Image 1 (cartoon, helix red, strand yellow):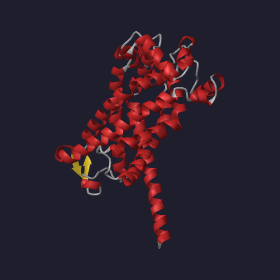
Image 2 (tube, one colour):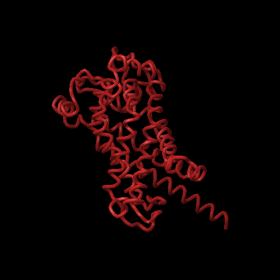
Image 3 (cartoon, helix red, strand yellow):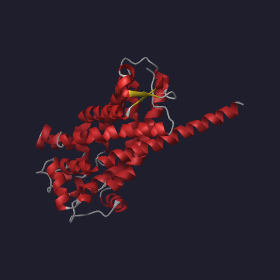
Image 4 (cartoon, one colour):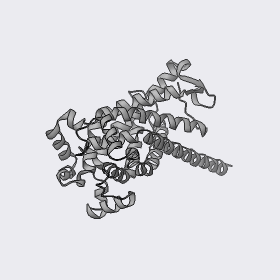
Length: 322
C-alpha cells in the first residue's frame, strides 16, 4: 500500500513540475514578444549603436522601421523565444519548488513577511540564467546588428562564430557575473513584490481584486487586472535595483562587435568603471532606463498574469493562505 502511495505521489510531483514548466514557458514567450521592439531599441541605446545613440526611444523605433523594416523591430526575437521558453519555464518552476521547500524549512520564523519568496525568487532567477545565458548573448548580438552590416546569419552561426573566434564557452558567458549579481535583486524583488501585493489584494481588498475559486488555497483567485497591476509594480521595483548591472552585461556581451568597444570585454568591475567614467550615472549606468520602465512594467505584468492564468487553466493552485 505504501509503495502505491509513493508511486502516486511521485506521479503528482512529475505532473506538478511538467505543468509549471509549460505554464512558465508560455508566460515567458508571451511577455517577451509583447515588448520585443522595446527590447531591441533598449539594446541599441544601451550599447551606443552609432546609428541610434543620438535618438530617443520613440524616434529610435521610428528610425528602425524607416531604415530597416517593420519586422526589424523583432530582430533577435527568434533567438529570444528559443532562450525564453526554457528560461521562464525553469525560473517559474524553480520558484515554486524553492518556495515550497523554504516554507517547510523556515516556516514563519523570518523577520520580514514573505521574505522566503525573495530568497526563492532570487534562487530561481540564478538557476534559470545559469542554464540559458549563452542564448541571451546570441540574442543580443543578433538584435544589435543593423541591416546592411550583418556579421551573423542566425542562431547557430552566431554561436559557432563567437565560440571559434572569441574564446570558446567563456565568450558565450561574457557578462555572466554582472548578470548573476543583477539577477538576485531583480528576480528576488519581482517575486517578492508580486507575492506581497497578491497577499495584500486577497487579504484587504478581495471584493475588488479577487473572484471566488474553491479549489484554491484561501478560496480566492486574483482577477486579471489585479494580476497585471501587481506584476507591473513588481517589475518597476525590480528593474530600479538591477538596471546598472543590466547595462554592464550588455556592454560586455557586445564588446567584441567593434574594435572601439573591445575595452568593455575586460571584466565586470572594469566595465562598470569605464561606463561611469565616460558617461556618469544617468547617461551611463542608467542609460535607457526610461525605455526599461516602458518595457519592464508591461513585460513583468504580462509574464506573471499569463503564468497565473495558465496555472488556473491547468488546475494548479494560485491562491495563498490569508
